Length: 316
Image (cartoon, rainbow, N blue to C red):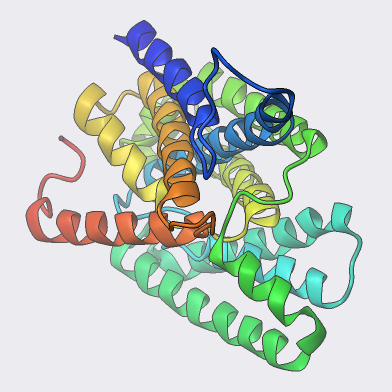
């Protein structure tokens, strides 16, 4: 099954490069079409896949460590907190290479605040965590709105960036995301057994020799790093990390040895497909920010989870 899914994903990636305002026939390409394919669409499709994989993987880890099936970078406030740092950096004219640093610092700070507020008697309260995430989103949105009001010169770039989209793609950014995702993925893959134990309860994990606090903090930092870099490069693309871990668990179970792979793969496929759709959904060559599409898909999926699967979040 895994090999077939990889083959399907590769074929989808190739097809996505051919789809756009101008459809490209791979058997009869002009020089201009060849340049469009290799210099514009190839890096963009790869970039959307990597960003989707980063968001899908981070969502899987958030849901595991917070023991909350509705947790992802959006609902926990990590995405909005990261966006706050990026918006402030854009407003203040910070060099582009430091925007990710701002996003990571504010994202990690916001997530840790939500985590602290969610602890009740040393245990995480899922409802409190969602409420704390909502509050964090409100606060971050208020500060972002102030930035849009006060820094009028940066208004257009901030608004377009907040919608979320695969824009300003460079090979350097692509390699950065691939390297970061690869390092985090390999670490989580090596420690998949510990992650499975961590999903049970803290006392069981501690009795088996796992430093729960250290492990949880480390994977929190890794997940937030994935989110903050993704947000700083592509804006707010919500709900990818909410949808794909549920699909992965429903189809292939909760074993983290499989879940981190399928969450990454489905996240890459979802964002790549959404970005492809955003290029052609509006006639005339206009492009819809992909964050709008993922928000629609994620919102509908969120309602589905709340209505039909309240008691069966984790067992498929």
